[in-house]
Length: 434
Image 1 (cartoon, rainbow, N blue to C red):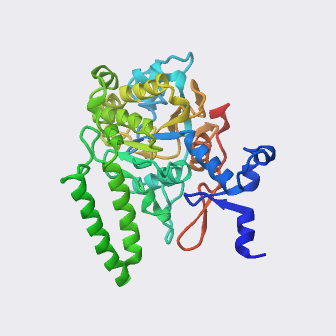
Image 2: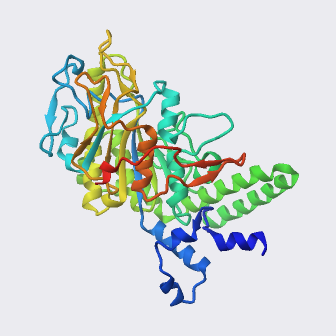
Image 3: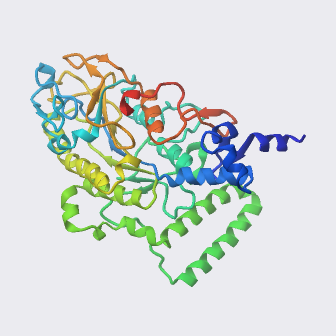
């Protein structure tokens, strides 16, 4: 028997390059149902893959660039000197308090799961941002895909005319992209949700636009024949996906003016508010992963006032996003993650700010099967050490993939032929889903 035949009998590749093994497929479809139909194994597995994509799971990452203070957000310490001037307030869940800076989030606490025991060793912005976007630290010779790229690769709909991965808030250093998965899984980057994406309206009529595309294709062919085939291949992918997008009626998802004034007021008026509303609109149109970036959280100086201002920009929009998703019946299939690259030091520095502190910080999740109204993990009274249920970065990534129905042990092959798991090590934080 030929090797290719053996391979076909063992695995069948989906159109996105992933492989479904027969034993996994049998968990979802019985032999009797196959026998009752005229489908081949290939047809049946392709249909199963389409069904998985049609389930519509999505993730919205609310990224706080710079490292938000846990003491001024979701883990206040009002009864200890390290807590500073920040007071705690009650929430919609009896017994759970968060910082007074987040009154809107307090109202939706029944949908939130707070992890107060996140722990890492990376206190450098660049390395920590990379780690919290990839699940890996930078490694020479391996260009790891980011979380958003992996999610798009695993469950994104290749037929969607919009990008499966959108980042709102401009380019973010060390946040990564498609890596060795290729340009197909790079994020589509928006500087602002308050204006349409740049260069997305054809400057000519449709006929002339397509003639220009054919001319570009002819020029690409000439360059490919001169030794630039790999470059041309990537370029064509970008041109084709961009062309499909700008000609699609789904581009309306980028137009916030189509939202009623009352709902826009519900989200608030900040740039971050616009990003959250657009994230919901994009997920409605089949986008798999949206990252909304809030900058300025590196509060070494005047931390209490600056954090109060920053939380004022994100509190109402985050709460509105969660309640809006729930009202539309989308929250169960949309995982919302609030996160930064690390926390801030328990001790306030002489400039009334807090410095980098990866040893103990917090993260928040909602939707996507996560049980809200709970706090996982704890630190000591001073906030200096995790004392209960430490959560490593690998644990956190495994939990995200678990929520989205993705096998974190899935292996992709890097361009140097090395198998790379989505997550190397770690365990799912089962309390999130119990």
